[in-house]
Image (cartoon, rainbow, N blue to C red; front, side, top):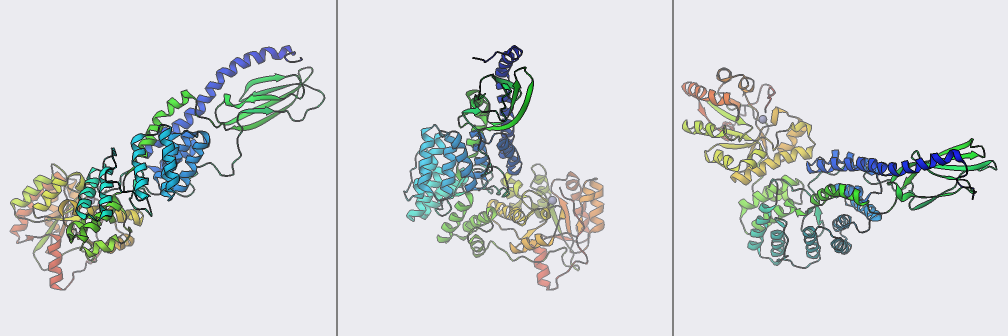
Length: 608
Ligand code: ZN
């Protein structure tokens, strides 16, 4: 045997081998942490609902480790929760190619199959997921759900621990059995037991109880070029034992050295100088092979560098699996099945309408369109129940000859400030209009009811106070409808007026506002500039600006305004003014049949 006969290489090779062992584990770790770091960032962003940001991290993880089952599960979860069921299926299948016993991938595959109407295949996936240790709570729900979709009534699904879903199964079964009262009771219980803001869709895969579209999601879809699955035609990687054969052999070649990622593997002195490399000793991904050909005198003849993509289909090594565990737990959490509030709200609207109970039907149809404005015929149903007023052109002022003013307070309700404001107005027997933020309405329902019970008018100031002109039409529509649903749910009344947050207004926002039966309410006097300076300035600004018919814009939340009000009210009363809501102001305008038109557009109001 001529192997190892060149003394110059012996030392290099031995130290190289030791070094190689050290470096191999380091190499594994370096790649693992990078994909893991991306995955960790992605799950944190997904939990915040920042799916587009998360997609960037997932894309990077897929590029680093396209054959890592955990990375594929991450991609599949993001795709599933953003409603791309075909791509989600591909991602989970990719995970299963690496690890056929991956319970999370089997569960995700089942959900994607269910969404695509492949119920039997889904049931098989869920059974396999259970066999390999998948989350038993999740699996019980989806197995029951698949059976329900197959026509098995499940009024006692048993052990469905996820809040809301047990009641939903009972309610939907009662619907099928024609027991409307039982259905209403159970479905309302399901709605209130479902976690999160009751007006918005919960996170995760949503069960619709609709056989035509069994699964839904509250998240916006990702752009089509998301790149979360490896390219279909990508080069297949190498796996297992790889036989390296040197190219360009000439009779003068006496030795061939092999290196991977800068570390010596072997020095071969026997023709045909082949070397069998165990690719399982390195991490999946790209590795650099250097083959060097030497002559008898240890002079280099030729050096060839090649890139190999290693793609071993095996589970992650145990040490690696431990580090991925929190990511996998977060993915299981993200894939918790929840009730689809939209479909459930629509069913409740129908049930109440069939019972002849129009007011609660109106609430549930309003909540349906707040989630999906185009859901079935929910808009028409809402109109039939009286929940769609007639939208009119924007109002800026009342009758110029009438000594009335409309006080309006934006941005509430706000605990600690709304109460004393209400007290003050009630003491003086004054009614006003509160343009409330929908999110605050749901956060402080009791305080909101207090405003309504005090005889004040509630109006729509959007759900989260965004610049509506910067949103997509769909997003702007939802901001308005979510707030309508919130006010209606809490007070039982449908608002007629809206005011754009920050005064930001455009033609397309105006179209949406009119389409949904709302009337924009602008203002004659804007107190905002003085509200941020001080009490005396608010008094001055309002008293100098006020004219008969004025709409005065103030904020529910500014202490300066609260302190300025007694002086303002005293002086306006002394001047002979009375105080009305916007509703009354508009009624008087209509009655006079001479619509007062503004001379110019509104001055921009910089709200909260
Ligand atoms: Zn505002």
